[in-house]
Image (cartoon, rainbow, N blue to C red; front, side, top):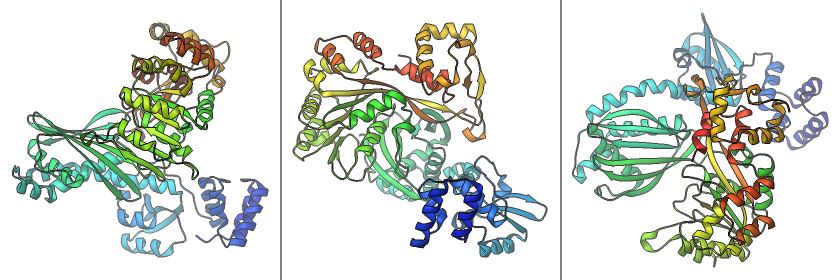
Length: 582
């Protein structure tokens, strides 16, 4: 799209959409380097993409459309076939009589407009849109494919023959019906942002479930005869033994397509009715997370940033399985991943691949345990060590000594609260003085589902609901904490009680597949081990005493952090109750 830099600069200066000095500076840079001013403005984050696109539309004299939240009827969407829509970033979104409105990234692409005009026999009305709009509409092609794929399962499962010999299994795995069924399962999972796929054989059928935002949902029911073919196909993709049906097997494979790169971590376990498959989806194309995006704010965020910059000591992340501990560690490693440091990890299994990080996979069958790998790793001149999980006394002792001898050690532990971690380490056999002098900070966390911003409904608590909550939480203390919080404190007045505060609950709409929730974020408890806490650890203090002292020093409990996010409209009371009840 050819818009002169001078023209864009003049419009920007007239409209006051961006800082004038910055625009003039980037205009000089664009002229000198022969670049587009618009590209430099976006790179430097001087103007948002949508604002820039609106300005382009104004300069060109054509309408601007935003389609991120629009659902386009399938018959109109399909007027432009999916391959053309993807290749030329053009989608049809409205038809009035003989006029077809199309949204484009480059409305000056007359060749594509002419091609679609000849193909459809309609008059094309081009509109300018943003990259995000095109991405969201292209997903709707996938959604309309869902209907097409609905009967692939029933049609193709009838064509699948059951075979038990190795040759039969190999042949079935290469059969078109089975390939289509597996591709469909994977495609739907990616489309619905699932974190896991469960394929579970029963006596008469095969159940497929997806874990979306931490909750399992039924996806589809398949006839029993497809299970041997499904298992064989996934074993072929994962390079596992086709003839092994009695022992568990693990592996991984990767799909790279249409701008996404997903790694599938596969676990196959023999069950009474066959073999159960669980696949974990790891999105390797996603941009690096930040601690802020994950839900850390205020003092907790400051403490973590301060502690991870220390040259030695231990940073522990605790919580149950599936609470996002590994993601937090990877995010911290991403922040620390600089050319001047050597980061090494010992994991079981290696979840995400990270550039410039040395990742070691545990293999206990050949004696490559956490402890053995960690011992060898200390001879590899590391600055920062990440131990996937402290599971036993030996691993814990090596990790503590590494933290004491000038390394920064990151690891996870299964405990319910931040304060409960310290006595747990001494129970495992660690010397209290060693724990007090090496542990820098403990992050306890859970994941809650985020309310869908398009359909959440506001309401206020009644007396009965407040009494029910008071049986579980110290509501008076939580209210005091919220009023002090810079994040949620702005939304409530000093004199407000629980009856006056506006809460939100899920409703369900097209954007969130009628779930009421979309995406997840963490709620946290961050305990910094300072001198006072250190003295209590050395004196073998209980979890309650440690927590009391940490609260006095300003630590926010997980429930309080959860309620701040509830008042902020990010999640619901039900979600915080679901993940914090012990």
